[in-house]
Image (cartoon, rainbow, N blue to C red; front, side, top):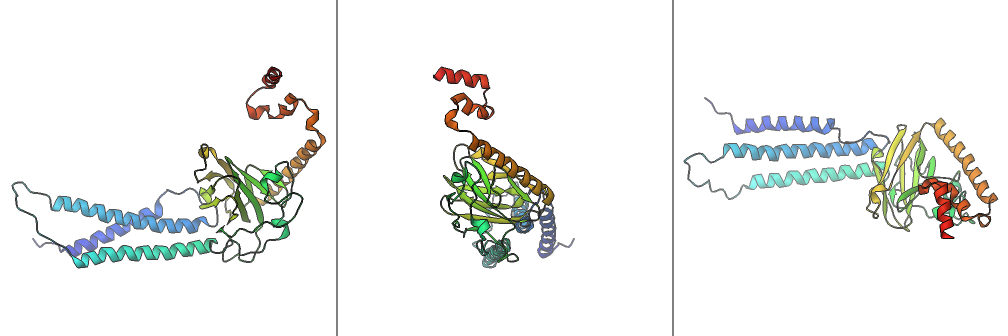
Length: 330
C-alpha cells in the first residue's frame, strides 16, 4: 500500500483549517447588535482577528493531538528518541508568519481608526451655539465648563474619536456635553438647555459628545455602537458617531472609578427624527416649568419637611416618616 506523502496531508489540513476558521470567524454571535455607522468597521477588524485566532488554535492544538498519537511510546519500546537539535527553516517560518500577521493587523487597525475619526477629533469648526453653555437648571453651574454669566467658548477637545474623513470641516448635527461623576452620567444639550440622565439622539444624525469628568477617570462605553472613550478630569475628550438603528442601548462606565463603579450605568435612546423633536419640545417645556417653580418659591420660607417633601420618593421614605424624623430632630 502506497503511503500518502506528508506534503499532501499538510495541504489537506491547511484547506480544512482555513475553511473552518473563516466560517467560524464570519458566523459567530459574540458581538451585540450593530447600531452605529462605526460598528461595521470595528466588527470587520474583530472578525479578521478572530478568524486568525481560530486558525492558530486549530493548527497548534491539532499538531499537539497528532503528535500525542503518532509519537506516543509503544509498549516495550525503551529506546531513546531521535536526537533533533533544531530546524532552521521551520524556526524562520514560525517567526516570519506571526510577524507578517501582526504588521498587517497593525496597518488594518490604523486604517479603521482613521476612518472612524480617531486622527482628527478637533478637525471641524465649533459654532458659538455649540460651544456656549446655556444655563437652564440649578445644576448648570456644576454641569458646565463655563460660567452661567459668560458665553466664552469652551476648549475644543483634541483627544478622542472626532470627524471621519467624510465629515471633516463639517459641524456635527447635534452636540451634547457629557459629564461623568461618581456614579452617574449627566447629559447637557447646549442648544436647548435640557439636562438629562439619559442620552437621547435622533437616528442618522452626526452626534458629537464633549466628554469630561468631575472627579476621577470614567469611560463612556456603548457596546452596540462599538465605541468607548475616556472622560478625564480637566482634559476635554470627544466622541463623534452616527446611530443607524432606533432603539434603547446600554451605556456603561468601562473604567474602575470607585466602590459603586458597577452601578454607573444609563442608556442611550435613539429616536426617529419625529420622536426626537417631540422629546426635545416636551422636555424644554417641562424644564422651563420646573425652573419657574424654583424661582417662585423661596426655600427660606419653607419648613424642613416641606423642603424635603418632593424628595421623599427618592429617599425611600413616606411623608409621615419624614415628618416624624424632623420632629424628632427638633
